[in-house]
Image 1 (cartoon, helix red, strand yellow):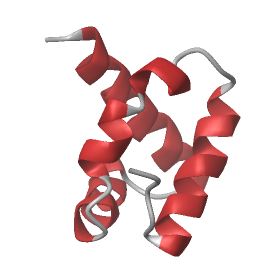
Image 2 (cartoon, rainbow, N blue to C red):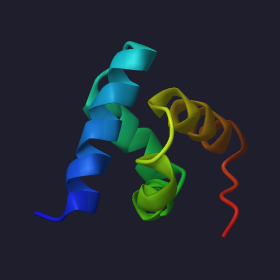
Image 3 (cartoon, rainbow, N blue to C red):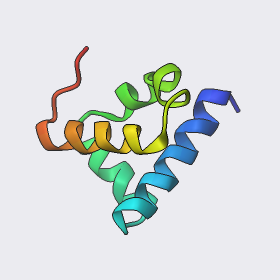
Length: 69
């Protein structure tokens, strides 16, 4: 298992706890909005800053559905 995937799993679980929902529900939302791959690719940024910054970014991505590819 790659370090990126381990971090994605940690981020998914942490974000789910932050939102008070299950990780399955978070993954469902990310998949529906085509954000899963984008968030996984954000490893370099997300793992170096405060987790709450990643949460705010994910909130914004979900709300707009617009990753900055």
